[in-house]
Image (cartoon, rainbow, N blue to C red):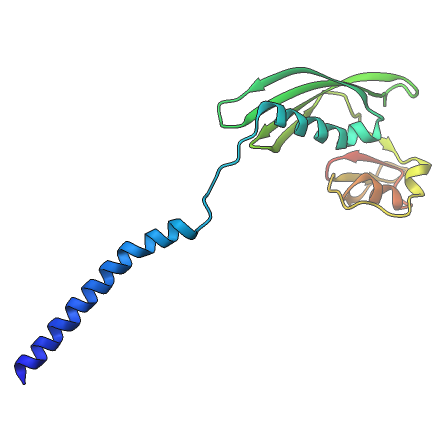
Length: 181
């Protein structure tokens, strides 16, 4: 009886070792065979340039200040994979002299197809941007997050709004400034 128990225990241990060995060999095989490969997406300089230009054309200064004549004036390749920066010049409505046009520069930094930073030239957007009648009469605002700080006619801060559209819909807002309050 003792020999049968020992033989049974040996058989169980050997079976367990064989089963564990098979699992150790098969699990990696099935994992690598049937799992999705992780492929790091790369972007060419030209693809990144297109992303930068689209970003600029959708930006507040380009849309709201009637930007046009967008011209690339510089580009840089950075050390990381698919990292670039592009510098542009564009013509916009002046906020200093009504009815005049001025040039502004914008630099866009891109890493692996994503915008990581956008720098606008100094003085592109001056402090107070007065809400126009057109902005006050829109029927709906898009939910784009470009925060602005709304001010009343005496220059008192009212609140931070998710974008200029929502600020100008508030009848108490006379003008706004870019950024949160």
